[in-house]
Amino acid sequence: MGAASAVDPMAAAAMAASRPPDETAVVNLREGINLADTFFDIRWDAPTYSAMPLRDYQVRVDWGSWTSIPAIADSHTVGRRVPGRRYRVEVRARFGDADDGFNGKKSTIYITTTGSAAGVPDAPQNLKSKLLGNDNVRLTWKVADTGGEARWWEIEIRSGTWVSTGGDRPRLTYGPHRAGVTRTYKVRGVNSHGTGPETSIEVTREPLSSTPPTRVQNFTWTAGSRNNEYVLSW
Image 1 (cartoon, rainbow, N blue to C red):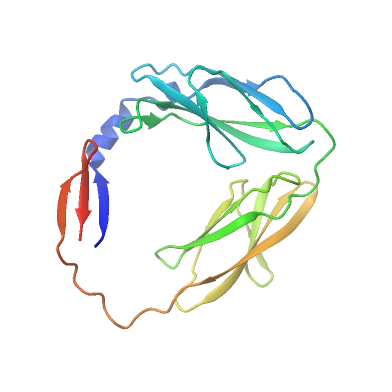
Image 2: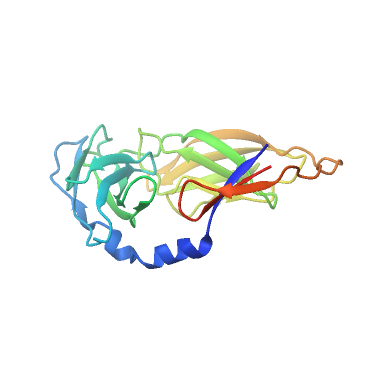
């Protein structure tokens, strides 16, 4: 049995149009007091959006996990950082409750900690793959907490052939990776100091089955727990 939920696209579009993105973003995101080589402070002013109550703020560093900050806060200290490294910091506000609320527009700032240059990026961590349709594969990974920042990433798609992601986001969708093919992908970070060590993963797309899928049975739909949501089951 499978299940999926769907939200009415017209209702979602109307909701999005009712909240101007700029009004939901924090105002004047900036670097605060430089506390030490391994700490830095960020500050912001509250968004101007007022149609729904502010629930809290969220902060993330270098595409990592979001950290929740109370709604009364206007600053956050980020610790255990590498001296001389540049960090990408994002802040967003969240409005309303968990069921009917939404995330505000993200604001981004780059901050370089004091100290000597951190050098090349360390090897990326937790490299994962996800097979997509149209013979594509998505690679994702975690930015290392040690070493220098990655200004961009390079992926070896076949022996000796590297492609650039063109930015610092730790993700790449590549194709074609066809059925029945096993391929090893390698990922490494690059900055002004050079190229860092690589991490690799072996990805296999299983051969296509010669047997067609069976017909879906017992297909039903019911109203979901949220507004304009439907649950499809089979």
